Length: 464
Ligand code: PFF
Image (cartoon, rainbow, N blue to C red; front, side):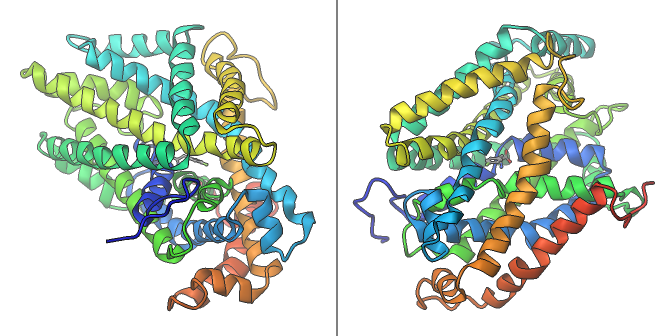
């Protein structure tokens, strides 16, 4: 039996730590963004590149974040200072998660709010008898409304705030321990149903037969972006959580476990969505972000139309799954900024959570209006929602990930790093040399090259 700790400011158990980190990683990125990106970028070839990025860059950066956070043990700014051997100049790196927390939650909560609304409609049996056109017009009318989506977005931020305010063990850890197993059960039930639909094999073929002629530079960049987003790496989110890890957690093993859970959930979501889409002739898997909010509710009604109770249950379980996935991730986003206000500015935890939530509610309102009244309000040619997504996924994540690798690979004393990865020599860690090579050379170089390519400095890949 694992010994529990009496310190309520750290995760009580090793399982709790894994589930919390997995809760952050598994989210709309898996169930909504992954199938969308896969659909738009040609299926299996995209998945292969994505998995490669997960292993080569994602997991090492995740472990890097774990090491920095756990070594610090208190707050992220302090962790950078301590790990650099007491150099105060590195404290600024701790601001990355604070700023990112606000940015990422503010737009993520908009889509999370949509899922909450759809779960509510499913509960009220509001999808019954609707036609394909009605699903389309309903979603467009809802998402472009000035009030309704804002209400659901504010509600999901308030729920997130309630959990974060409860603290590390009673809020974050307990929430993850309840929601993650439920999420898994829901997924398994839905995969079973989806695979039994007519033409399910076409969905499987789309997912598992790669067509490399579809691979272009933008596919490669998107696959890297998706791997980073899906694992929550680069923003310092996992660094924040790792401050609450116990000293006996095996960082390398946990990093691999979290990445495996994350990839598994992404693939299983593909197994729910693509067989369902192919079960109706004429529907396309590349329907973009509308896949989950227009195409799927329509599919559920059509394929289970003869047995209304199945259509009801399938829709309800699917949207509840999305809500839980979104919630465990938004908790980690709110925690990034709230932890700073709590630890560095000494606000009580509940007050810190409320302050950050209120700011996010305001910013999220602007992001929500990007789909309606403010769709023509542009900064750098992007509306608020797209701008926040661009800043987070295309800029801060890769740059943050690269900086953290350079920090740990080149600035931190190798003995300190080795001690952290091997729990002071008590673990064997056979992967340590490979890991160190990746964070010193491979990861910074790869990220730089992909960036340079995107900026047009080199042209490695020609567009199809
Ligand atoms: N990994 C989450 C998802 O796949 O939905 C999203 C996310 C959570 C991104 C936390 C960034 C973050 F810091």
